[in-house]
Length: 167
Image (cartoon, rainbow, N blue to C red; front, side, top):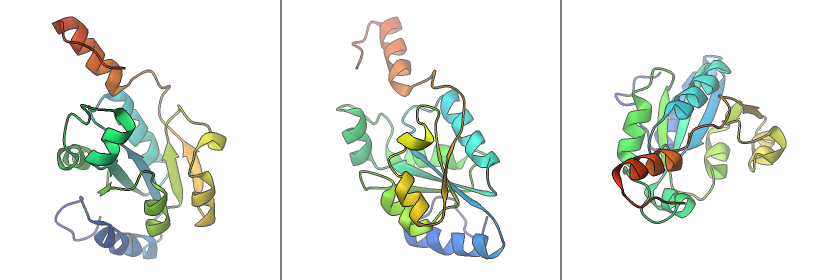
């Protein structure tokens, strides 16, 4: 990691930091997600992403985009807190919050060597597969089988406490 005090960076700061990492010969990996309620599936996904490169960057969906993806009432935790939790993991080098509906613009900006996606995808089903190829990178499927989700966790809590669950 560079001299930045915090691993949570705005996009321009991230681009600068990654230029230095790339100049040192390091392979950059990008993982992304909402990470609304962190669970073991997230930890395994990020650990798997870290194993395929030298520097792990995690893009965290903004609150607006997380709500668009997950529905009303989500995210439970604001983006800054979700980013802080992700940044505290030893497998993670840098974190950035992105506000676009997809991670395409972030891929174009940082040009990672790998775009890591979870096992709920295949290489052929990753929406950004052509974008990552256009910057010279590759898709990598990492993590354990998709047996965990924040929605399932919310529903389990709701069921055990009598609170209405979500779809």
